[in-house]
View 1 (tube, rainbow, N blue to C red):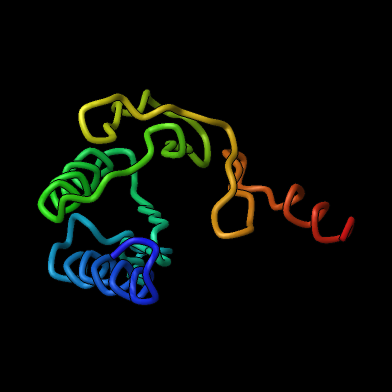
View 2 (cartoon, rainbow, N blue to C red):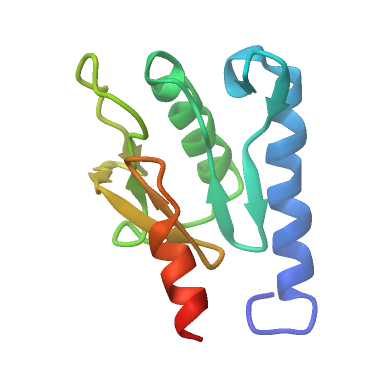
Length: 130
């Protein structure tokens, strides 16, 4: 299906299932301010999982098993973990398929920069320059 007219539609429908499944599992939902439930987010072939450090390994295992079951493949070079906020204790290492996920200080997701400090200066600067 990749490269066909229906390729992105099929990918979106498949990845949407992952978001819907996360509403059924409390460990996969991030509660913003303890109230707003944020599921695993996806856009065509991009994926974002927001979790507290204590639950990140469970969410990572769930995403990996879903991806393997659907016979999908992530690019290990493009997958990264960003710890946002103060590091009170070391985070557990996460996996991409069978490899170790890299840790970065900032990265771009759907046109916006995500920074470990939580700051949006990089996104604002890029938009101002345009």
